[in-house]
Length: 95
Image 1 (cartoon, rainbow, N blue to C red):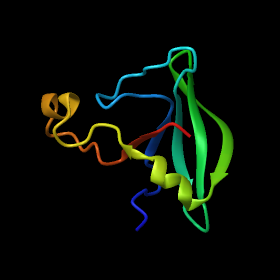
Image 2 (spheres, one colour):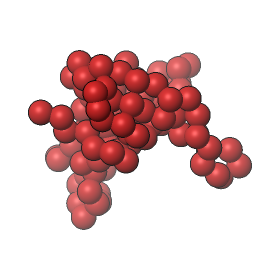
Image 3 (tube, rainbow, N blue to C red):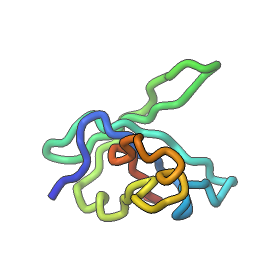
C-alpha cells in the first residue's frame, strides 16, 4: 500500500528516532512529493534568505518507500509535545 500522498514532505538524511540530524557532514535535504504514478516523484525544496526555492526533481521506484518512516511517530518526544499536530505527512529516510 502506498502511504505517501501528493504534497507530503520527505526529509532525506541520517536522522535518529527522535527526529534529529545525526550526521552533520551530510546535511538533510527536504523534498515534496509531486508525483505518484508510476513512480514516486520528488522535488527538492530549499530555503534562500527565508524564501522557498524549488530544486531538482528526482524520480524513484516504489521500493524506495520501504526506507521511509514517519519523522515523528506516535509516542515520540516531539509528537508528545505537540499532540494536536498531524505528523503523518512528514517522512524521513536515508536513501
